[in-house]
Image (cartoon, rainbow, N blue to C red; front, side, top):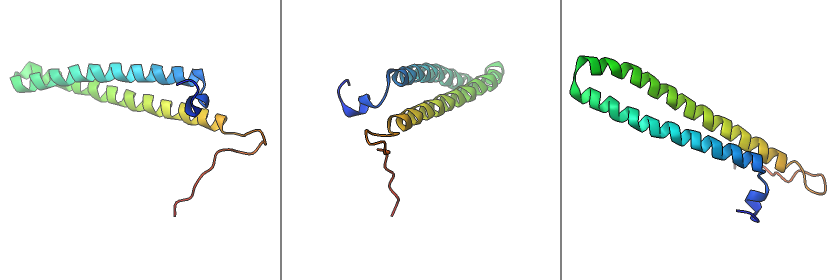
Length: 103
């Protein structure tokens, strides 16, 4: 990616943050896959103890989904902040970031 105009606008710290966040998200999603499989098995078994266990597993799944949303929100904020900093001005001191109005 070195040399292209997109990577030139994003500093290494932002790329590290992105990579770290994506790894965390993937780990959570992998764990969620296991939770969903266990929830499905417990549901199919119709054993009362297994069905009771599903309550806690579903709570854990919901908390994990919230964590993924939070990670993406943080990632989005970091990315936007980086893009704002990189587009604050060009050599003339004017903003290079242009916004278009919807028609």
